Amino acid sequence: MNEWEKAQKGYLYNANYDDAIVRARTKCADLCYRFNLCKPSDTAEQERIIKSLFGKIKGAFVITAPFYCDYGVNISIGENFYTNHNCVILDGASVKFGDNVFIAPNCVFSTAGHPIDKDQRNEGLEIALPITIGNNVWIGANVTVLPGVTVGDNCVIGAGSVVNKDIPSNVVAVGNPCRVMRQITEADKQKYPVWQGK
Image (cartoon, rainbow, N blue to C red; front, side, top):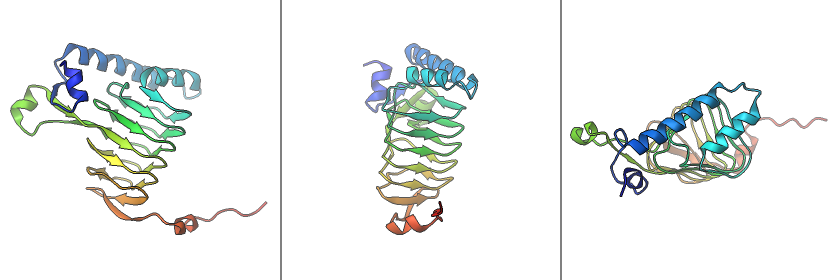
């Protein structure tokens, strides 16, 4: 089994000294560099680069530069995906986003983890565990989602949260570590004023 195959199966793998993995990361870094240098008005070129980078794209998307990822091929996004400035996705393993996912600035989705044992860490070994974000999820500014986490459908993850465990559907969750605060209810439709005029 090669190092990439180990990574995809959740085994420790050599991320720093394996030539194929280093080449794949360098190719991805070049594409991110090109994307981040695009004029904001050149949406056609931005879209072309992202389509050549990501593993799967379901529909319309907006990704606001700067954007960074490790490989790109492990990222899949659903319909109506949006991320604000400075999103980082470390996709050594699969990172799946459902439909209607909105991501605020400065968020990190990291499938990458490192051994607690110093000798394994110093050898360049790491682990990659998949991340899944459900449909209709809003992720606030400065959120970090850690390896192996699933966030359910219809969730709001509050700004500054560190999500280190699964979050069930239909909740507001916040904090470090991120915890469920409450269920989302019909009353939430009344939280903000809605213009009723002509």
